[in-house]
Image 1 (cartoon, rainbow over the protein chains, first blue to last red):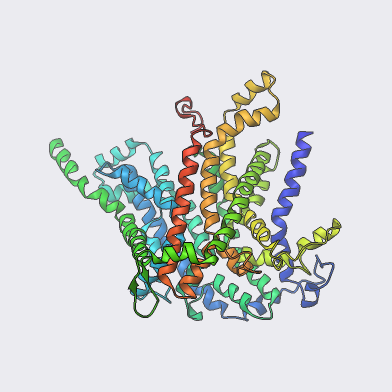
Image 2 (image 1 turned 45 degrees about the vertical axis):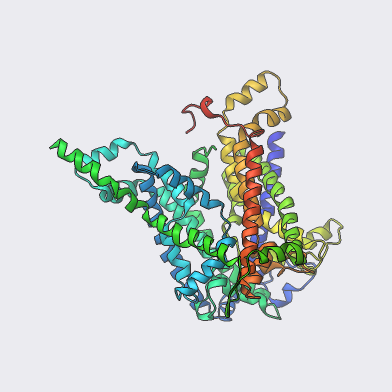
Length: 270
Length: 306
């Protein structure tokens, strides 16, 4: 009885969560006429795959894709590298002031982005970074509190004996990090890389504020541009939305085990 | 030899750990602390993007609090949004987590379905919902018409627009749900068994076991939801552009407009500090009163599920 009710509720609710995706996918392959009929057409008469290349051609999406890829790849490498480096520093050394600094690091997670938005804009303007991809890439090379915290947890699960043994063999701190700990925290790195990838790929406000020139635009900005026009091109919006959703979805399916294991395998008390 | 080694390893670590954490220290100085101090200074100035800047003391704050109806209006919209979104977000995440915690086959699949929307946040999310909310062709109003309800003009009616933004935001509750699910799974099964044997009914088990044991996670998600609710900008910016009739003109949007449309950086900086202080105060109040209802297992919990 409970089981049947649970199944019923799960199926109904997950249908609600997935329906918007399917609706968008179906919209993307409809014709203009099918789009504006009532009651809505669920299943297109024939699937117009040509909508995808046609929509792609409506703006310089190739350029946007290149910009998005540049930002995502370069900032993800930076984020994974710098966060793991800092996490190692906090996890494996004792030094005066370590604990207060770590508390400070955790506290920065509470600062709303809006407070930094305006002065950061001025700062990047001063540096001549406005209308370049630098503001979207370079800050990622300085680590992020949440990721540092996450990776520190990973490192702390590695027994100290491993470090001691490596030290005995003459490894210095860098070799300890690079040769021993980095390979051991690969699941954590995948997690950090994935979360950062998704944030960077989906980011709208950052590019909106820092980029003016259309040749510098990222994909989300291009998609947002459809919105400002008078005759809203719904098929193009749906088609580009589907394309924009694909990389995070594909990535998610490959790494979902890591995400679920991390969330559900460890109890994050406190 | 071992002495020499010990000395060198004691001398060297002075600098080495700082080298490892230096990226974050530098980032903190240049991208967090520096900007925040700068923004505090800006908030005390009349600071146009181009032209003469002038020290005005607390004038920006005074004008905002006493002469700017739009400040109060946008703050009202944000508070209203937070007051509805935060409890709903936690309640729904909790219900979904409880459902997923029942041992039935295929939970992994359902879990993925609930989590999926939270990986495509941003513009894509807005575009998906815009079409669903469409007054004439939208899926939502079609669904309502099947139930015999004449659906409202979601994005065009000031009475419904904020609800539209709340629903679209709730679609991305996957992260909160996952945290609560992790919490549920770490509650020792023995507690429920003992309760069952003693004849404690299911609702009482929820009230006296599940909720107290889950309270640290509930507190955590409450605070993070609160912070994200106050920062709400992207969805409103793209879905309704603040309209209709400013019914979704959020506080963060007013900051954004002041800075990048009206080019009044000083005023915008002052507003962002007000937002920071509000968030800080609310978090402190929540933390202070949480002692009464948050239960930490502390020493009771051994190695068990680590």
